[in-house]
Image: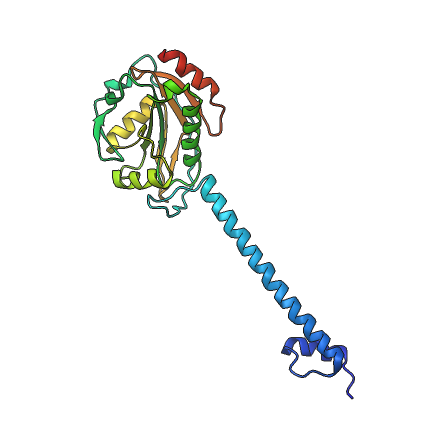
Length: 247
């Protein structure tokens, strides 16, 4: 009987052990098969983990392109500016169209407290977190005040974020409450409201939009009560300021 050398074993492993020589060689083949199977399981496990990581990314920050597809856009942040205080934003008479297809000026919300953010649907950075922060602020309000408070998400991207895209975005992100309004306007009126809110934004050559992360709260007459800059900030102080201003 031929004695199997180290090189024979290596050669057998490389060739897939085409000839079994004695019990020892059979054991080697079995071990190899088990090792390959274990490697496959490990690869599958890694793939499942990657899928879970992708799911978590979508849940924690990925914005879609209006229909649930990742946009892959991460924006550059810009610093906040001083907002327009002491004056009502309702003097701005531009007409907006919301994600339900209804058109109206900002004065449509006169008599109601308002929480405002500016976003774009293809954002993959802080925009989804800003919207969640606005929801946290809304939920912090007393129940009777919450019922009448409007939440506005004004898009920077007047070309891509049509009312139809905003409707798909609202549905995908589960902003179905009637108090939510995602607003589309033309280039001029978006620049005008952003300036009034102290929000900077700039379109980049790669399709991204650099912008300020800010939430603004308005009283019943459209005057700025408070601002919340950055993401994942405490919301209690802003909720208290809004509550005090409208009671």
